[in-house]
Image 1: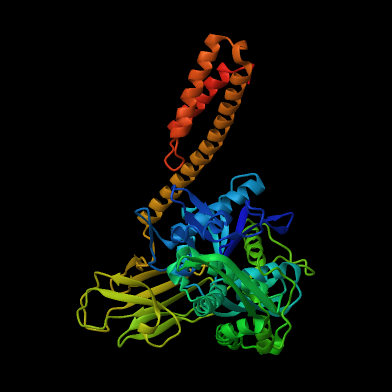
Image 2: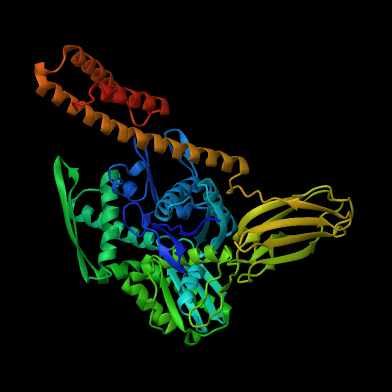
Length: 585
């Protein structure tokens, strides 16, 4: 069995790790950075860009550049580009394919297996969407693991002493907090809470809005109608946010941002840390309730915490760190890298699933991980009530059965609406699937005995089966939530991804071949000119003919539409010219 990689599929940046010599190692991206921007772009030439290359061209190609796709996972979001629809799973798969490629180049062998992390507060549909993205990317997803749990796993490998740890994970698009107990070689999640739509993107949006207002007031122009200008403003907002983590103020300079009445607009503004903190105060305050809820569900006081771990790039903001101090009374630990620890924990889990148990520092014991389900699971019953079956923070994996019956006399079919959430009424929770049991024996209301079983695996993904106890028949029920991709859609996406990979390789081969051919043509032209009459007339005629043939092919070739057959023809023409110029070029 090959290496198992651990992937932190982030909103803003993604990271990949692998265990080597019993230690998790971060795999550098093709750009040399330790993380890969979670950005996908489609150029007008039909090329697909992922990561740093996609980020660099976002200003000039904003409408065909997709970022923060993680926020759309498990929804019916669709982006249409060049007549083709892209769903969140397929865009995420493109990011995963890039991470897989980087890992294979680093390790030196094919990678098939992976552990992928998700926010602890991701529901069943979002987790399944992440797993589907992995399949589309050509990965066998061994486990879906919660991000805070993964960070605690990375921390627990080196800090095996018994203690209760809070992981405060504020990333680019999501916020999670988990209370975790480390002791006797066991890492047990006691409680988790969070907000799936709170993170660095929201802080960036506040700074962006401020910049737009300042530009309108001071420079008398509205940049919202200028796509390229808005992308530059967003990039500047993100950079200003980062700079204010280390400085009390930052200069935002945007020369030639846009044109107003035929004149270029040069923006030069100053933003102070105090102004920034005022802008985002309410967003930081939103992290307080999940922290309190997690502590309450874990039945512990803040004073009982041994450590508070900060995870996610947004925890570098001083105001966020101060909020954590106020909520917990603890100085946040700087023992782990907030950008890399989640991927490292996933790599540790992957190695463990291979049967290579990792030893906790100081204990000599292998680590055992016990995670929890983040949200309660309920069934909609008469009156629109959400009847709870599995409570939040139940240790995984878990299996629970309950007997239900019909609400109307002589009912032949029963539709069961499965919900995820904490509200008492069904309409206020997330419906993750509707299950229909057919062929029930006609009987008065309340007589049929229908046993519904919920089975939540270690990935936090729900499977459901139902049994009619009267008839003695058992039927499996498949979740049919609209937000999920069907098996046919997944297979089509896998096929498309493979085609994309093949097309990308053909384009790379073609680009390299065109460069080599152009160099050969230039060298040939110079040589023929310099040799003059020294060159045999017949040979000169042959060289010119071969050069002309190759030049026409090179000029005609378009990378966005190049085929393998066309590449083969150019390669053959290049070889013919090399043969006719042998010994002189």
